[in-house]
Image (cartoon, rainbow, N blue to C red; front, side):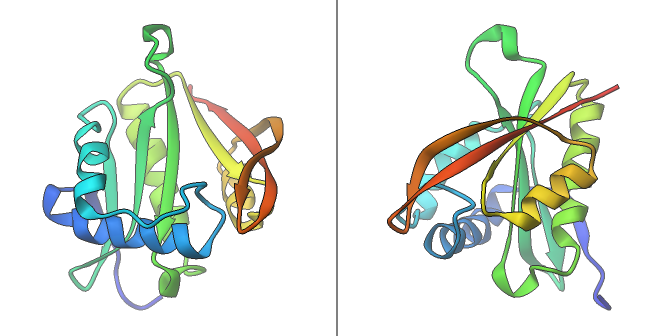
Length: 166
C-alpha cells in the first residue's frame, strides 16, 4: 500500500464515518449480528459509552476514516473490569490491505497501556480473515457458541478468542 495510514484516537467528528463503515458491515457481512443499518444518532450513545478506559481508534488515509477499532466493556459487572472486548471494521474497498492488522495491533497496544489483564474477540464461524488475524496476534480459541446468531437467513456459530496480556 503506497498511501500512509495514520492510527489515532477517534473524535466525535469521526462518528459519521464510523457509522457508515459499521452500517456497511451490517448490510454486507456476518461480522456483526446487527441487521439494520444505524444512524449517526443511534451510534452516538455507543460512542459516548467509550471513555479513556474503553477507547475507539480510527485508521485515516488521505484525511478520510477508512476503518475503526474499539476496546469495549466485556461486562457491566465490576469483577470483569480488567477484561475488554476488541472489535474492528474496515471500509470494504480497503479490506485486504493490512489495515485490520494495524488496527488490531493498535487496540492491543491500548489494552496493554491501560493495564488490561485479558482481551476477548468474538468471531463468526465463517470469517476466515478475522479468525486468522486474531490467531496471528496470539489470541487463543477458548470456545464456540453453536448457532447463536442469525444473519441472512442462516444460523451461525460464534468463536470466542482470548489473549492474556503480560
